[in-house]
Length: 265
Image (tube, rainbow, N blue to C red; front, side, top):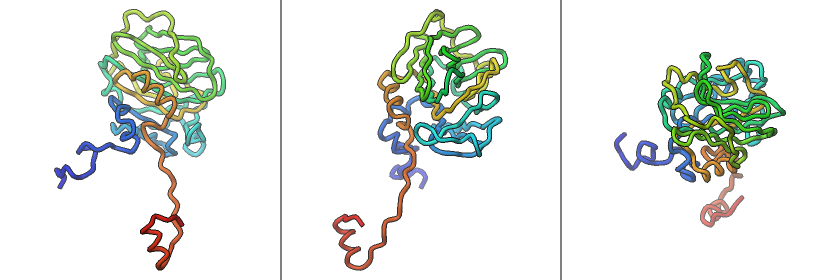
């Protein structure tokens, strides 16, 4: 029975969800998809990519840190010690020659917003909006940056390749990064890449303030149309479940006519 190709399953070539049917290309190379916007899940932030890299809320209270977001829900970070950590993405990304990080975050002011890899030896591969500067960081000392003071809900997309280095989009528009673009280092081994965290830069013990509603991790460079698509529709990868109301119960011939002709109650 399990080998029956007629069974509609992902293993048999069917889409994992309605959103993948609508935008199949956006699922190519997806290594992690963390979407607090889909709703509270206690101390676990689910990875909807299918890779199983679920995150753990650390120093956070599920009763108060799941809050209203731009679309749906978000996680609220207090800037002192809150973060979400996942143990699996390191092995998926180690030695990669391309990567993309996408994040949707609310900045209440000139604060820190961050997600990515890092360790206590100061190695990191991450996207960091530190006060009024955005840094794209790889390795110990490679961090092209650009001045930016955006607040409110901000959509980030950071791409990297071993050939073209970093490129950065904020709210669907590409920004020009400053110096330090030469000789981009490759991604480290899994051991040196460090932990994957949302809301913390482990390398320097810095923590985010504000809300984060979406984070995606890819092992490829997203195209400009794909980045703009995710900016315009943050739920393009997974559609929130819609609430379904029970229809009024009809009886007798009236119910039969409604079924035959598709009339509404």
